Image 1 (cartoon, rainbow, N blue to C red):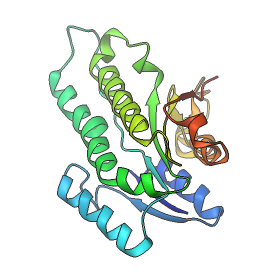
Image 2 (tube, helix red, strand yellow):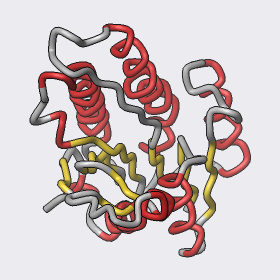
Image 3 (cartoon, rainbow, N blue to C red):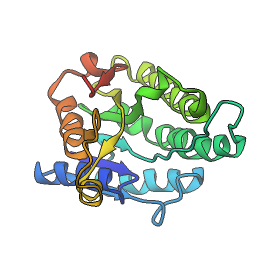
Image 4 (tube, rainbow, N blue to C red):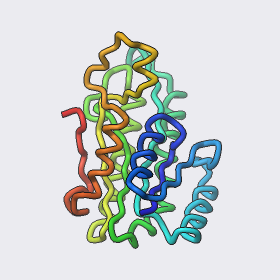
Length: 209
């Protein structure tokens, strides 16, 4: 399979890329230094290049993220919303619009985003983040509807937060309660391929349970 990992330079992207490479799949991992996902033309060019070189993708794992928040609702900085809109929504729009045609043609394609519990339980100080995550989920569910009846699916993985080895090393006494290890997230993405597309299309899989 051909798997595209966007936001592939961070610990989560490295974990997901490593998982699929270990399974023998071809992974194309891109980060902001390689492709500007806020540039729709650049994303379309990436899609065209992958289609020409590999015939299309069988998976897109969209891992571009970020967090901003305030101490209270009234303290919310709308500049945070602008930033989160670009990171969490606009990049998702560009990537999904560019690769939806390829996913429709794949016999077993998957499109995956990582959302947060905050989208369903917003806090006063996290208004911008929660709203952006909720919008990203709605967009992904629309993609799921577009993929209905094909061999592909769009799925939302829900976490409280993610943890990796570098975070543990920096805070050896930390317990990180409720956090999802990036390797467990990678395995969850892999498990989506073991289930029929209809079973995972448009679902919110809560990894905290």
